[in-house]
Amino acid sequence: MSTFPVTRLRRLRRTAPLRDLVREARLDLDQFVMPVFVAPESSRNDELPPFSRFTVDDLLREVEDLVRLGVKSVILFGLPEEKDEEGSGAWIEDGIVQRALRALRPRFPELVLMTDVCLCEYTSTGHCGVIHDGEVDNDASVELIARTAVSHVEAGADIVAPSDMMDGRVAAIRELLPETPIVSYAAKYASAFYGPFREAVDSTPAFGDRRGYQMDPGNVREALRECELDLAEGADVLMIKPALPYLDVIRAVRDRFDAPLAAYNVSGEYALVKDAARAGHIDERAAALESLTAIKRAGADIVVSYWTKELAGWL
Ligand SMILES: [Zn+2]
Image (cartoon, rainbow, N blue to C red; front, top):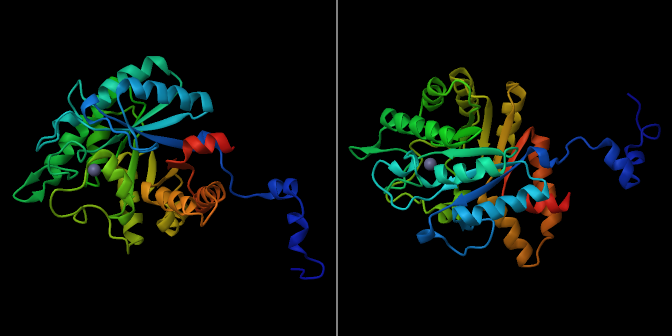
């Protein structure tokens, strides 16, 4: 290998077009997914975007905006009229997400409609499953989660994304939905970075926390086991959540598996940059582009990000 002075790596950094020519990780709006929150009129809020809760009518307008900007995929989260112990609002035929899908599907035939499949926005306990004897009952929850996925597909979803971290939920959904792509939140960590999201969907657990089912932040080999199991159960895409504090996990999964890989750039990651920019410490656009590029460089194909709409304007 030749060294200096024959090799000079600065040669390709001299101008912007030269740098563009050799850039390894790129941001392409085609692979970004915008999260949106839909709620009945009674729990609509005036939280600033991207954490606003839209009514179905507001959502149609918002999505029209997104599509006009070039966004091709959204992931829907819902807030029910009422919560109960089983989270029945998640799977009922006229649930909030189901109503939103029926309104969106005919209006935006080309848009990829992905739904988050979980119970925590719908249970009175705020947990991702049903509670029996003070604990989240894995197998009973899996049945309800699969039922939720089916109801989303019947209402028009293209892709279902189970985020509950129960064991066996991908297999249960796959059995009922042989043709539907599943984006599995394969390695979802019990993270402190979900704050603004939990407020948006009002899903802070009423007791305890989610460490009994979400992953421990110290583990990466376990993430590989989760991914292996989800692929074996029939997942089409693996997802890692959060993204920025877990770039090493994204890289490890990328190196081990050939399936498409998604990363969820969560609300806390977004808020950190947003608030630091508001305080005048950093430039939001530059910091956001750098963060998203880092997620791509780590190996993610698909990025779910609250910056998707703004990114559409930047690119
Ligand atoms: Zn959940």
